[in-house]
Amino acid sequence: MRFATYTSHGETLYGAVTDNGMIALNDAFPQWPSLFDVVQAGGLGALADAVAGKRVTHTDFQYEMVLPNARRILCVGVNFPDRNAEYKDGSEQPKFMSLFPRFASGFTGHDRPMVRPPESHHLDYEGEVAIIIGKSGRRIKQDDAYDHIAALTLCNEGTIRDWVRHAKFNVTQGKNWDKSGSIGPWLVPFTDAAQLDDARIVTRVNGEVRQDDVLSRMMHPIRREIEYISTFMTLEPGDIIVTGTPTGSGARLDPPQYLKPGDVVEVEVNGIGTLRNTIEDEVV
Image (cartoon, rainbow, N blue to C red; front, side):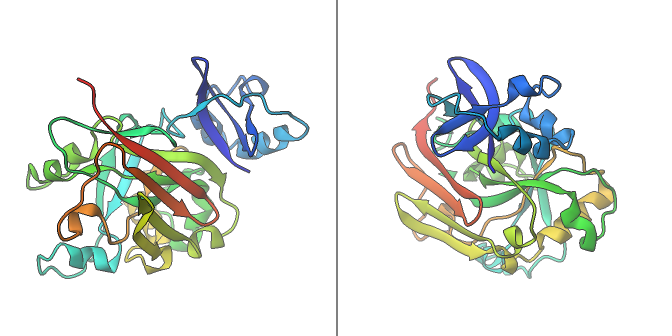
């Protein structure tokens, strides 16, 4: 079962994704105005039950960022062994994970353009799995961590590389340009540990494989991410954790290869799907 946020004829809706189109579910759940509200209420199971017997309602639509009103998005940086080596700064693998915030305004949806701003042409890709928290918790043990996940989705954590170096202690300004990244296409309910433990990330640019790795190689596995983050903040339903990208981003190639208008970037993870975006210049 897959659930998405989408727009059709100027109306923002959520519903179930089928091979033939969308089945709108808003009217069946007026108490939940958005997919974010569904997640907060633990309602993904109710959505799945409601799909039975319903017909496709929309074939003409556009995907939106899957939780466009998400309140908190935390990203884990440099989380694969080879990623640390890519920096060529002689540093050892970090004992603790790097974390930074992103905001929903920095993301677009599946099959929509990621935007390159006029201030910098150093737009880069980062293919990642994102987890959606479904059960609140503080100081969550690793053994219990997966019990707090409601769903999975994909992220292209687009980054303006030169802007992440504007200051000594943060990367926020390079990570939050409007519509510079993408999250989607949909939510896949999390029901089995194998959905993460056996997952493989492949990122392609114009059909060329640039990133290819498995989540089991993470320096800070997802169970540890949940444990660590929930130590200092209470995780709440609807929170998004973007879990880390493998080696192979454009900035680390020789010479660097940044994204340009007309490029097509695909992030594929078995069991979740493929997130696809084009690149466009911002119109100012």
